[in-house]
Length: 431
Image (cartoon, rainbow, N blue to C red; front, side):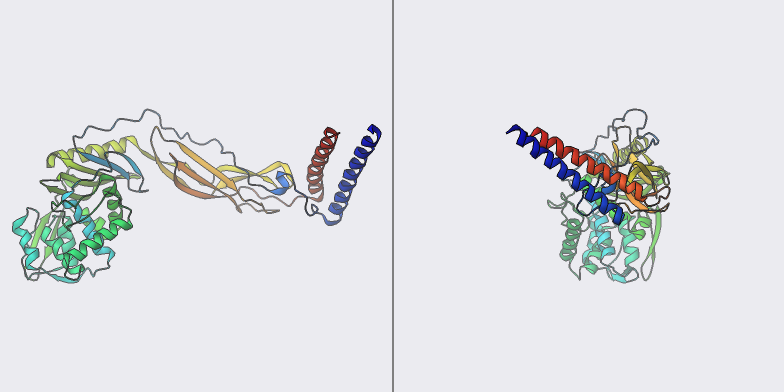
């Protein structure tokens, strides 16, 4: 019995050797690996994660500073460039926001493609807000004002009658229809804690937003070139068919804080003093939301201190440099050779002392048999604190030639021998 078992094992080994010789013969004839044979990782050209080279340190020296004490109900800071929410206090609390609402009204006017030179008649209802609220520019019924000038009056001087005139015009005579359009836009932007009931932000139970939502909205507003220009205007002149009206921006930061670029104030008895602020310095730009300050002075102090905090805490820096190597890939059939992969473009991101920067490098599932310098072979993706900030193609830093017949043979034989040895070991252990 033992003799028969040894004979059977010997036969299986001979069979394995015969298969190996057959594979080698096919290889020598065709110059390629025999069909159905699984190559080693070099021959199979599996995806190989790249090894990131030494790069400028991702860590910014020091500790993350504590946010300033503001005394307001809610605030938020957003990176205006990427739209990343950075930090805040009660950023998702639903709160009344006052005339900050008018930035949504202005955005809807722009999204609807309303003609900026269209002349809008001031209705009696719109004029009624001149005497009923503090924020107005004194427009009179039957005056005609262009859409452009009404946007300026609404955003610069917070003219309530101006925004109602726009709401009637864009809403086909219905303020309620226009408010519905505002809420549709809020839904499109994913504003989960926002609802509008008036185009001007007058105190009602169902006109509210949150600091995070307002930051998202503000970034969308600043993407409109005309609106970005208007909210950065300190003084302006609007015209009717018979007179000109000089107006001044209610956002004092534009006069007192040089980096400021906008955006809007809002004050009502229930909402308190609110501020949407934006600022830009060097390569960094931020949006700051302040809700529920006790008075005008507090909101501007809070807005400035939060912007200064953002500029102090965060730094925009290159996280991937163009033409630097960020990975490598094994060459086909050459497990001891690789090609280095360089980024085609720079990826910059906003980071602070506590940021976790991750670079994910992948290569093509199947590298071509040969490649020239500059051929696309992979990709590097950059994440900061788990959030994707950008990606760049990776290209061969140097070209490589197709593997020779000998290199293909050696690689394939090596893989086959490993399998034969495994098979023999398995047969032996099964005796």
